[in-house]
Image (cartoon, rainbow, N blue to C red):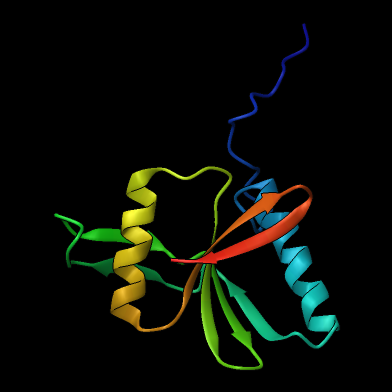
Amino acid sequence: MRHRKSKNSRRPRDLPYKSKLEEQYAAHLHQMIAQGELVRFKYEPFKMAVSSPPVASEARGTADWWVVTNDGVEVHETKGYERDSDVLRIKAVAEWIGVPVFMVKRVGGKFVKEQV
């Protein structure tokens, strides 16, 4: 009997990224470095805990990407889909850390980032 892997199953631990989207975004960021558009990036560099409105309780999370551009530093969050709780958490983090935070999605085969 052949076992099929669920679409929602976790990625194998030996891969550095938690999803195919993150893996594809890493390749995209490497390409941007090669083109001189970025200086460097780091995947999941730190965990965050922020307690401030509009989140009623402490917002915890791990920044997906810490991206160093030619103009400064940005945080990028890659999401296949957005939940309201994700957006509130990201907004709380953006206000607290004081650097631009972007939600990144794949739309029509291209990565699109939107500042939160």
